[in-house]
Length: 550
Image (cartoon, rainbow, N blue to C red; front, side, top):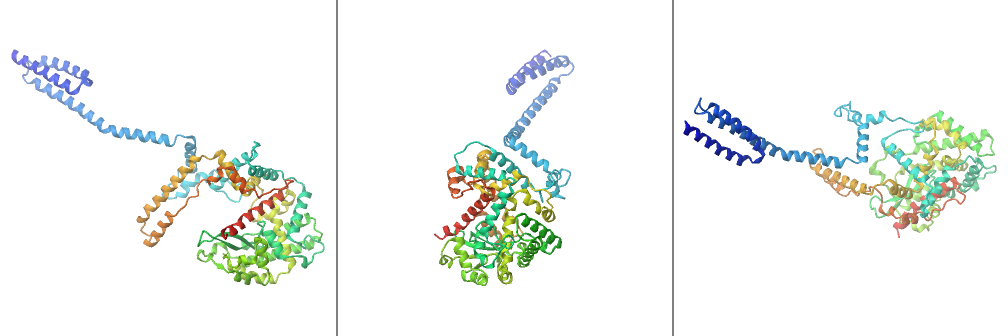
């Protein structure tokens, strides 16, 4: 027994050293506790059974195996823990900025989490936004894009109010234009005299002149003046890109000249009454020499003339995309107009070019039926009605720029047509008007104040990823035939992005050069400024034809 005991103790000591070497210093304390316990149990039981050392060994091996399993589990789970931590850190880096958090919050606000997106995705995605927005008395519709546009107008309004000095001539012009709009006073006499001066250029009208003669009215001169100021009675002419060859431009003709966008309005007797009431009171306010009954009669004749135009208007929703691109030669255009309008003289006046310039030009007509039928209407309409129609068309175009005393007569008609019971606030009207007039200059101001140039590259990257994903998905679209799929892929590959802004806006000298030919009123007359801007914008458009042919 003594030898057996000594042998067992020697064996335990050897086993101890092997275990220590295997587990290392990390498990020293655990092993010592286990060793002490094993020795005590061994001494207590060695006399009872000669095989107790075997059970102790089995227990200790189990502990070792358990520890090894734990280590292996830790080693196995470590990559997943590291990956999870990496993703967590990546997420924090991606959405830790104020802009990201606020955008995320806005998206969640717009959702309706009570809806099942699989059953009604529109309600799920939009109900939150719809329920938190409502129409104001000056709006006919609302949308998320309109909300963004309104927010941008507020930012631009604050920029335009800034009185800080600038050396950029274009910025000085746009601020002068904005302030002249904001300072629109109730000086009725100034507004009336300015409008009448403009109407003298349009041509004499029986509505406003005591002694009117049809010989004094020149339709070519009248339409030339109005069209060059982006006021378009009867038809609209502009320069547009040739759809079949983007390197060239062509002369574009389109129907125009109605007060009401919907043709059915002209069949509404209530609308007819409101229009007559509006026109009669407005012309009286301009100090017409005619009695009220005669003014009312002539206003009704204008309404009936527009009703005839509306009857030949082509509804835009019915345009056939395959037939919109219809070209005519110069000789064919002359045939349309020759019986009632000197189109050759008109071209020479509006483009200030010799008639030979137009012989080889391409004329694009989107509404040929309108022009073919217009001839009969013009041949049977008295000249004084045409003069009154064009005059009243100009007045309506400029009316939003007139003092409130002029606009009050239109309110009942506006409520009936659009449901608008209030006009937009003056600041909103003037900011939008300034943006329309000086788009590049206001764009440069907006960019310099609020636009993050890095965002442009991010957006381009996102759009490019969407484009590539679309191309990769095309082969899996079963309902699309191979030819259509090929055409779709070609179109996707040819996409050119127009994101952000053109780089030339970063240099204010480029903007100054663009607006150098735009001269505003020396007296800051808001109505004169409107006409000067309209003339400048039309000239910029007409120059495209000259540039593309030189």
